[in-house]
Image (cartoon, rainbow, N blue to C red):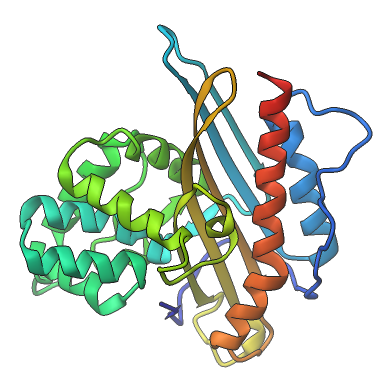
Length: 303
């Protein structure tokens, strides 16, 4: 679901945008990339140059089935992270199901993940702990942070008041998604199943990474204002972010996690479903495709 907040003072500035469909793969290059970073850099640079938007991507690759598995990471782009928006619903759903594994909570988790339903997410949060007199949920933060730590994210902390406003970097999100694949408890397995349903077109948010077969994903988006006075529409910005994971077999078995994001100055445009559809079709879909192509190019060259 779309989220809107105003009068939020932040310290990053997204550049002005001119919407452009990038039709051809940005990974074409005369020289073969030798590292994951150099495979991704031309993709991000092309989209940033031609649109004026901020783009970012974080990827982690881990080999499985070896005594000493290798880990390869890359973090590329101007946009390194920001508000979690609806991606925060993943650890919240796991935390709520662990504490109260009721049929009602399992149904709420289904709505929260596959439909990105904000009311269902709030109900899951309230099942852990209603907001106190200060408007905060400290137990929710504790239990959700436990999920993050178990998945290897040592830095992120769920916001006490508004979970969608959690600051989550792409790098930490990619780490989380690698670890999420390894959680064996039933709530985590159920949430992973729900994330895979987004990719088979039964879920809300079927765009970008969700178009790639085999990726389990969760998306988030929202608009925010740079200044305390949000009367000037030039202050408004829109973020769209996604996180996904899969396993790929070459002559090695790779666990792959990808987190992507883009931030745009919207300059007074009305933010509605039509706006988001246009943004996802013209920018997020081709960007996610080209990122995935770059990752696969790297894997082919490093069998």
